[in-house]
Amino acid sequence: MDGSAAGTPAGGGDTVTTDVPARLDRLPWSRWHWMIVVGLGTVWILDGLEVTTVGNIAGRIAEDGSGLSVTAAQITGIAAALYVAGACSGALFFGWLTDRHGRKKLFMITLAVYLGATAMTALSFQPWWFFTFRFLTGFGIGGEYAAINSAIDELIPSRFRGRVDLIINGSYWLGAIGGSLLSIVMLNTNIFPKNVGWRLTFALGVVLGLVIMLVRRHVPESPRWQFIHGHGDEAEELVGSVEEEIEREKHRTLPPPKTKITIHQRAGIGFGIIARTVFTRYPRRAVLSLALFVGQAFLYNAITFGFGNILTTFFDVSTGKTGYYFAVIAAGNFLGPLLLGKLFDTVGRRIMISSTYLLSGLLLFGTAWLFDRGSLDATTMTACWCAVLFFASAGASSAYLTVSEIFPMETRAMAIAFFYAVGTAAGGISGPLVFADLTKSGVVGDTVTAFVIGASLMCAGGLVAAFLAVRAEGRSLEDIATPLSQAAPPDEPVSATTRA
Image 1: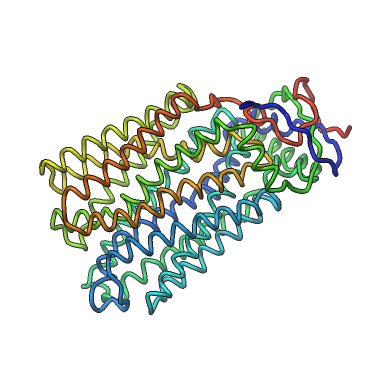
Image 2: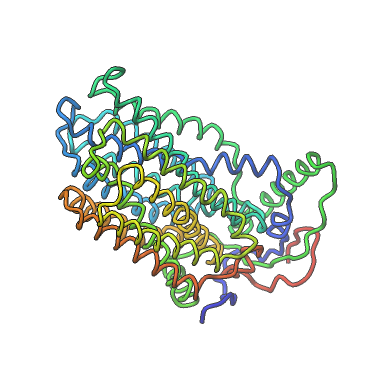
């Protein structure tokens, strides 16, 4: 059965009745929420910077005199696949720790892993070293996805959750713009030698990560995680301080919360319970999650890693100029979630998720047809990709939103990690490897085949969403998927936390 029925909790902790979720959801937007967005959301800028940088500098690192004996195909193929494999592994490893030990501890640790691995990448002297630390960089980024998405959804009020989540995930493309423009400067041999510029590009990613870490220190633990895991007093104190801060900022008293929830506190959830919850209680939601992640993962990990090669192979764009084209594409990607995000909260999840996936897939089919006919040059190809990715970016961001809100609180980070890992492994590891072979052949038909595969998977994801997407707009997380620890339905008003 696919629904929100409460499970029988495994005992061990106190039974607590709390109104913390309702108090968080009824908060108006405030400076405190902006701090959450900046402290947590900026990680996607780092990921965009990483992926785009490698794609744009692949040609330069492969040139003689770069300091590394690798080919462009190895960078966009093997290194890209290892980065994604690391992200999948990191998501699963840190996702389990996030559900068990809290959001805050893990989103500090995962950022530290990313910073260390990126710094080591800049010092690469042999291919094995470069490949190893690309894997470890992905390992940190994958952990970020699980810890950050779960924390954001648990801290943002329900009526803003869709647009905020989409815009934060879409900020990946701000990093992509930065990576594209940065590569133009760093690959200019009149400014930096061949063996220095690409290293400085990675080093600047470390600097940005350190700035984010300073802001992130002030982001609190999720009160929803706290009251389930035996820290009810801390959750109550945190939410109370936030309410006082917002009342001072808005110069008005907040309305009383309308619902409460009673839960059995517990230390952690085993893998067996998580698996049974996701696949036995919510099988339709599991199919939806896999379809969305596989479609967007192949499209983005395959195409993004290889776009520079397409420009240089088929349109004779120099390696030092690809950044300009990619910056334009990245801007289109960011505008999608920015302009369409609000519609996910107003028009609704089902219509918007299915339509963005289907539109991007159909536009990609059209792009493949024009490319096959020889009707495109570098500029018009870029324009086509802007149109495709305007919708695809909003759809891809909604995949993370969907998985982070449709499964119970106790399994949230692990569910994000699992579906990200499986979907990304299917489309993100095989995608770069297949796409590198198709684009390096220099045969138009091979690249068209890659486009058609990506378009087909996006359309398939859109059709699945049309039938299975959950209407989660404006609903509390506890209403969308009842916590496994819930002991009684949240059906009567309450004004303060009480112990049963």
